[in-house]
Image (cartoon, rainbow, N blue to C red; front, side, top):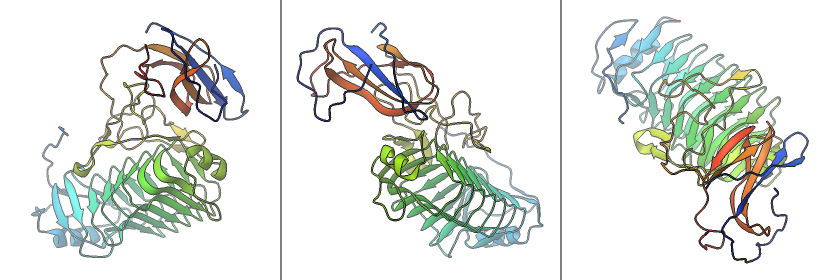
Length: 404
């Protein structure tokens, strides 16, 4: 089966009762085409109460009003100790997290740091771990990592700041399973070494999803970058591995000296990155309430979301996390984004199935009449793994006519 090579619209035709499915695969490596055609019969979030724990002092605090107290406790914590914030809202900014501190909250929906009255939210030192909390409304960066090695950020939400995370001159930074939402810029990395940005959801960051400038050996994969003017900006990076991401942006990516790419195919050729990435419409359950399970289903496969199974367990030496934002194990195919949430079955029987015969292929599939006239595409240029895939027929052709 093949894709239509015509650049114009297909000719008008009356569809016979039994159309046939055509599938095209293209190898990334050899750019060869192979043919295979087949036809078959047509929250509640767990919000349990967490015990108040502060390993350095053991004192109870009013989470709504004692931000200054908790800021002081964090900044005076002994290097390498654990600090656990209780559920609640804390007004504190420019919090200097000491070296090696493991700072965590009761969960990103329960523990909220409001940093509106300052410059930055959290300022991480070498070896810090930050987990299970939200930083919001910072006039500068929600999280600042400056010349601090081996900082880990996991299961964190950063929202409504000027920039979600700023990483400058730091080695070994890792952000995973995190939500970066409604900032001007999601993440800005400059002069980093060995950074890993994996399985995060960058959503509604108005100007830019993320940027990497002058980085070395960074790995950026399994992320969703959606609803930004520009998805990603790259400049002067060495050893970058950028792949297995989902983009939805006015411009997928930009590099200096070239116009922005409006398609992932054009971006792939320009940047020589994102070989297995895709460009799909995606929406989430209740973003303003912090619920980021994908709510969109694929038209041709309503039993899966656009993020389902398009990720990878590793990229080079970088590994994807074993669990997702909520702590659930990532089983089966690795999903994109912070949340791996199965889509409820549609309840409709599949119309048929098709096979992908290459392990590393870009696939397009369309529905054709026996005379070879295109009725409609199921999808175009999706990176897919070898295997069998059920499909559901569209109800109408590309001209809006009912398919018998």
